[in-house]
Each structure stands twice: as C-alpha cells, then as structure tokens.
Length: 130
Image 1 (cartoon, rainbow, N blue to C red):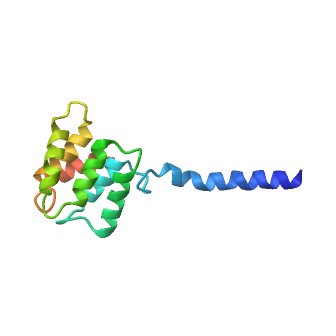
Image 2 (image 1 turned 90 degrees about the vertical axis):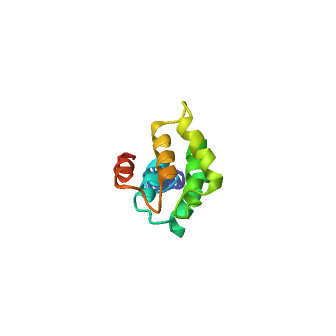
Image 3 (image 1 turned 120 degrees about the vertical axis):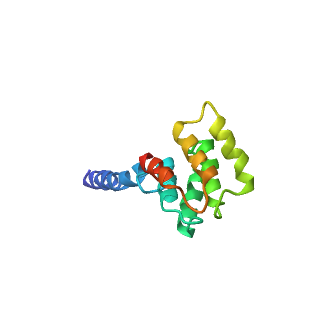
C-alpha cells in the first residue's frame, strides 16, 4: 500500500512539473505560433538567426499549426533580405483567403512588403500579435 501511494505521489509530482512545458506551446515560449513569428519578425535584420530558424522549423513541423502558420514559418526561414520567390505565391494566397485569420493575413502582408527589416508601422502591428 505504501509503495503504491509513493508511486502515485511521484507520478502526480511529475505531472505537475510537466504542465508548464505542455502549456508553453510548440515554441516553448508561452506564445502562440503567430506570436512567436511576430516576435522574430520584430527583431529581424535581413534574415532570421539559426536559433530563430530552428524555432520556425518547429512551428512548420507542428501538427497543431495551421497550414497558413506553416507556410508563414517556412517563408520566414527562407528570408534573405526579402521573401524568397518560391514563397511569394503562398503568402499572396493567404492575404486573399477569406478563411485566413486577420493575424495570418497581417503576417503574410508584412512579409511580402519586407525589405531587410519590417517598417516601423509593421513593427507596431507585429507587437500587437500575441
């Protein structure tokens, strides 16, 4: 009986310690995928760092991320001063998709107009995305 209670207590303690990790989201920062991408874009200067690319690749591979979030994450990974040619059509489709969220449309539009880094107006929009 004591052994069973000890095992149950240990399992409960482990479940409590894992809860913050589970609630942190796919990026591990407590942000949504869109919020994490917005944060990366806010600090962007020409292209994402290797660490940021790793985070974006996690979003692109996350089974809970939407198709639009995955496309946006991949487009940010491929950035080099501006959006890669292969990503432009996908981002344009997001901006025109009636079913796309306003956040996805904003992120796609910001990426399409990006020239080395987001404009001050775009940074203000990005800071509103959580």
